[in-house]
Image (cartoon, rainbow, N blue to C red; front, side, top):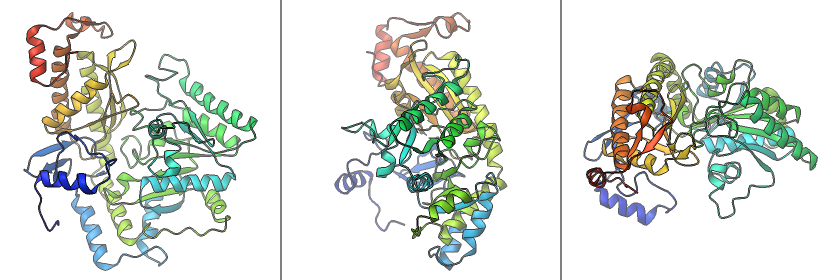
Length: 480
C-alpha cells in the first residue's frame, strides 16, 4: 500500500517532474487515476467503475484471488533464482508444455515480452550462424534496441526510419487494406511469395536468413488476421534457407482466440513454429515471460559455450503465479468463454457495420477483435480522427478502449477473459450512440441503410444543418 495518498493533481505534477516525458499516459488531457481493479473492471480514486476492454495483461481478470493467493503464499516461503532446484520451475514447464505441440519442449523463463523476443533472436542467430531477420510491416515486438530494429511500428517514427541492413520488411498479410485482399484468389500464397523473394534477394547479396518473426495475429498493426496457409508457406521458404520461424504470442496466447490455446494454431494442425515467445497474459500482470523451442535449437544455443542465466526468470513466485493462471483458465473454462463471448461481440459489431457507414471492417478471433473505421468504404480512407473521438467519448461513458493500426483507426478489443455478454451489450450500445452522433454531426448518411437496402458501400455526405452543427460542437465533435 502507498504510505501517502495524493490527490489527482499532485500525482500528475509528480509524474511530470520525475517520469520521463516519452512515457505517455492514456487520455493525457484528462487522465484517469486508477486505484484498484477486479475482474474486468477498474476503479478511479472517486470509486467510479470503468469497463476494461483493453487489458490483455490481466488475462484471467484483474487481481484474481487464486493468482494473488498463489503468489503471496510462495512469497512467504521462498523466492530465489533458478540455479537452485525448485519444483515450481519444472512443474510449470511441464504444465505449459502440455498446451503446445510436443516438438516445443525446452523453455527459457524471462521477465517480459521484450526480453523473450530478444532471446528468441539470439537463439535463431546462433542456430543459423547468421543475422538477417524478416519481419512484417507495422509489426511491434518490444522496446529493447534489438526489437525496435525489427518493429516497423516503432522505427517508422524515428528521425532516420531506415531499417538495419540485417532487417527486411515484408508486407503485413492484411486482407482488408493490404496489397492482396479478400477478393484475391490466394492471398496466403501471394504474401508468402513476397517473403520468398526477400530471401532470394538476401541470398543474392551473399547473406543468409536467421529467422522470420511474426505476431500470430498482429495487434499494434491493426488486429490483422493472417490468411490460412500463410505461415506454413513462409515457414517452408525460411527453413529451406536455413532459418527459423518465430511466433510471437505475447499478445494473443493462452486461449484468447477461443478455438485454440495459441494463435499460431489458427493456421492449422500441420503448422508448428520453431520458437514461440509469450508474455503479458502469462502472469496476469506479474512480470514474467517465456521462450519455448525444440531440443535441436536449444542444443545449438548451448554450443556457443555461453551460459544463459536470468536472475529473476523462472523464480518460484513467478512460476507459482504462472501455474495459478493456467489452473484458472481451465477451472473457469475461459477459452470456451472467449470463443462464445467473442462470437457474440463480433455478431453485434457486424450488425453495427450494417447500420454505420463509418465501420469498414470487423475482424477477429475470440476476444481479439478489431473494428476498422473508414470515411469511404471503397477508398478505405482511414477515419483516424473519428476513431479518437470514439475512444475519448467511451472514456466519458466509463468504457476503456484503444485505437491502433498504422492509421490509428482500428478500435481494439482485447479485454480480460472474464468479459461477459452483458459487457458486450454495454460497450456496443455506447459505440452505437457515439457513431450515430458523429455521423449526424458530419452529415454522413448511407443511402442503402436509409432505404432499407443492404448497399452499405454507397455513402453520401449530406450537408450539415445549423442545428446539427450546434449539436456537434456542444458534444465536442468537429464538423470540418
